[in-house]
Length: 355
Image 1 (cartoon, rainbow, N blue to C red):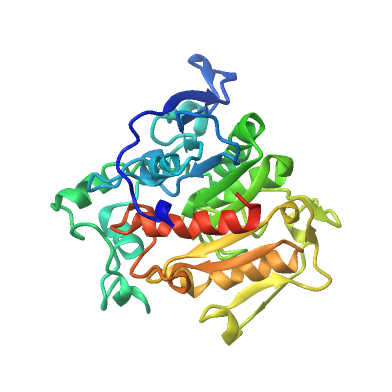
Image 2: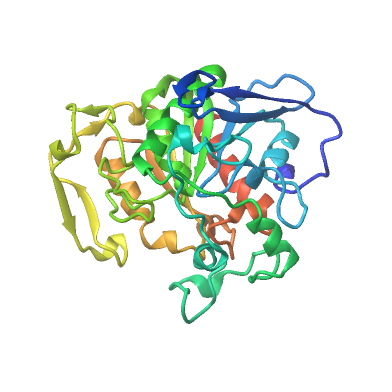
């Protein structure tokens, strides 16, 4: 289909920005905004009938991950507008243009260095920092070390996350939920560490979600020592509760079973003991769990699918390689074939929502 290839910059579009979460709290310094979230939107010149897309960035990144690639090409947000879709791109609280005030948000975690990020985004084909499929990674658009211009432009967007992961997930639930109330029902796309807060928001506002695409989100379910001082005690996030049926007021009410099964990959999988609590809200719209060919997330993507299936969700594992898109790593929206990667998302949405 024609939309699978960039057609050049949009010559005319409607665009703007706004904030959600503008209430204040009283601090020693006086009244301060309580973790507001910046939202940038863009739409085609004419009104569209399809569901808008909301793009949630990951880790210590920011919304710029979706605007322009490090080598200067159109990002997923701009390509979506070219394809006739309305897009909302956020800077999660404390990231990018959403200010980080330690007096409000608490202490930040240490910013991840180039050396810490490289095994995730630019893993070497072998040796330290590699993974079993990293030799397949061919789509990073520049060099893989500081000093390369493209690498340095990508790294420049990196900032801190909240040290208190549970507090971060709870705040993101509120802010993403507020945005969904304004613009939904929306196609909700989340990446990496943006996943827990997004799942929480979708659970809280299911009527505002048309579909959810979880791209290599933080996990696997019930993961411990996730790198930011907290465990995913609710399966999908470090805080809760989720809308389980029967209800679970605390994580301790979820009986868990951990086992080693070859069909789930090389890592032990943790699921609920049967009969499992259903995720009543998350089961109300289709969910895609997406992974790229050369990403370490392929080692445990089936865990998330199994957890959601067990909880009664309409979920599908979508691997880029199975859709003919090869060579990508964790930062597929930034890589040289990002338009091909986006086509995987759009085709899935079109097939599920009939757009």
